[in-house]
Image 1 (cartoon, rainbow, N blue to C red):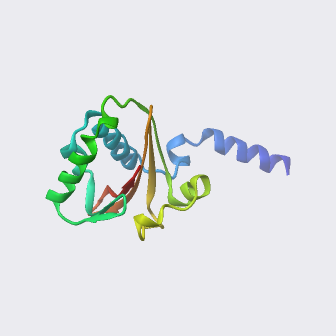
Image 2 (image 1 turned 135 degrees about the vertical axis):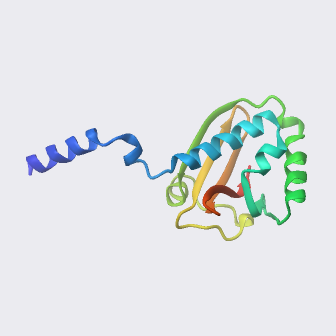
Image 3 (image 1 turned 60 degrees about the vertical axis):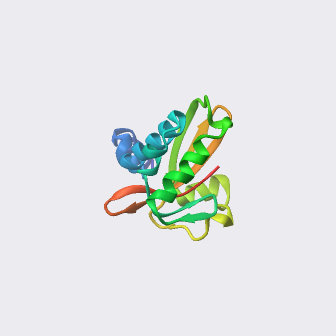
Length: 145
């Protein structure tokens, strides 16, 4: 029994962190880009990270024009000015549910199996985004604050 525990410890220590992590690095890049776009208040940069249709705080957006308009409206709010990014956390959907509870009903039906949840923590706000694989890339399919 001791040899089995020792072997498991050696394997765990010698396995690179990237192999241990279930989160795809590309999804982390998308989440970081979303956070940076919010801080920069760049609606175009944020909109390009989304896949249509996208649920924005309970409203399903189906056109690029409407998506950019919605992001512009959100990013122009006074409380967004001067936000400072504190942390970006990306976890699997089931981990997010265990840690934070079920997503709000207003987000509708979300992809569960391969979806990831990005929690963006700013100095005075938090944004949560659901990422899913769309057309070969990670994209935002739902977002709420």
